[in-house]
Length: 273
Image (cartoon, rainbow, N blue to C red; front, side, top):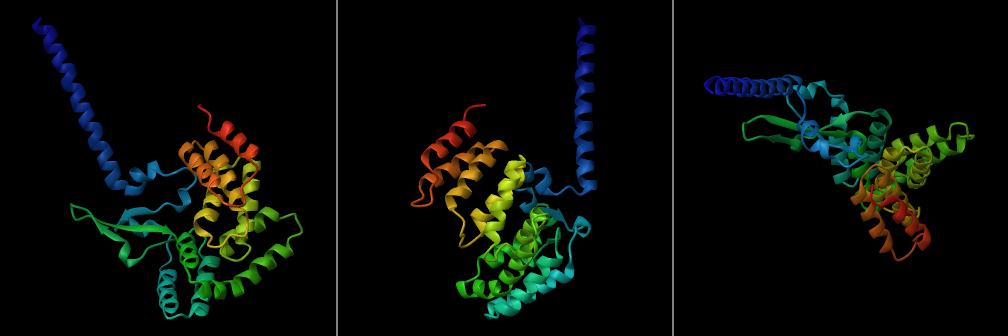
């Protein structure tokens, strides 16, 4: 009996030390690898299709490893100053330059620094394109009009030069550089439709959310956007997002798709797995 108890105790002790060892190893890897809190924490719970718009928090040491452009950050500060003075023409020139040059670049601001209870400092980063699109979308009516005075001409020039052989490439370019132009929502919706056709539902969710949440005065049908968003969200497993899109669609006063089409989407996309 004593031998049996001794053997069990030995096994339990060995397993306990193994578990502690694994915890220490994981802790060391996280510390040494500079894994951001966004990646190991809330980043894992991000809504499908929003990965490239997620904010990331990294410590001060590992921030230097990110793809940033200090010159752009200084230019953004200058653009903020100009916009606050009502010089939207000059601010728009800076914003457009950064959108043209800053594909894939991350940015931060001085006020985006946080400190944890153990005095560790983290800095928040986000894609520069997302930050600029939000900035432009929040402009007053006159500011948006001034921005579009040049952005519209550039976007339309890209679209008119396309002979059809590079359509998707051109649409991507318009959405990346001129999304807040007068034709940006049309380009994004067409691109989302192409994504749905080839079953790229994550890409479709991203584009449709972009129209839904960022575009201040869409000319495309809100009903069409929400219906496609419900379909794409259901296909990436976001049942709540799909249900929300359908509920908002039903509250629209105008621009709603025909009821049988809405019901078909509801029956197909929201049925139990």
